Image (cartoon, rainbow, N blue to C red; front, side):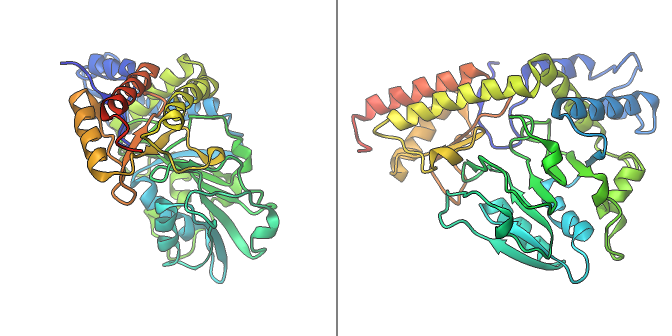
Length: 361
């Protein structure tokens, strides 16, 4: 069976080398005579997996010593609740920058815990620069969604908060480009886009933000629980952490984050150039805010979009349908998407446009 080009926004494409490694080890991990899925999370073989996954993530992202790396469950959606439970004390407030569907959901959950002040860009696809004057001096933290999977936008420059801890949902672009971890108080990411399979969530949290949870914070929503117990307070998603470790090894072998950024910039430039030069397809995002990972486009004609998606699927291009809230198409080109996949998609788009004879004009 031939593998397709998987452009899903998540769960997303994984490196083929990682999948083959999983296949090789599925029945007997490290000569234990057991699958990694059968290993106790208290066993030495699994603890070694956990330690190595944390070490690799620290190395690849150059995580400073005064930050903790923890593995949890619940995806970014659970973090929407954990963050205010831990960082939004009684009588305090938090600033949230609303740039898309996921930040809107984060705001909704935070409002259940405490006072939230929302900052909204003027345009749907605009993300302006933010300076300390934009934020409340009373804010306990500033929250952003640094890459918007649905809208295809990103922060091209992170907000200057003037010392207020910056919290970022990096689910859809972590490891895709260089970041300065020390600029953030907390970074979190669901794994199912660039880190590994669904089931595990990563948080990188500064030491000063641990131990600040409210008294009514449930144990499993308290960051201190994961820090004190090294992410082993209860049974973690062992298989997902194992695959995450393999993905991190693959990233390191392929040039690290710098290598990923270079290949991602080439892939994105190729696809954006095709769209920009097209008389049929359009991308609504200003160039300075265009995502490297999630690229929406459309013909402006729902019937023509549907035809494109039907023919694309027949040619082995999967999950190109845009999110229901925006329609059209969306190509998610995460780290594991090979350059040939984007090249093939571009060739198909040009062929489709030629066959339509300008119908989209």
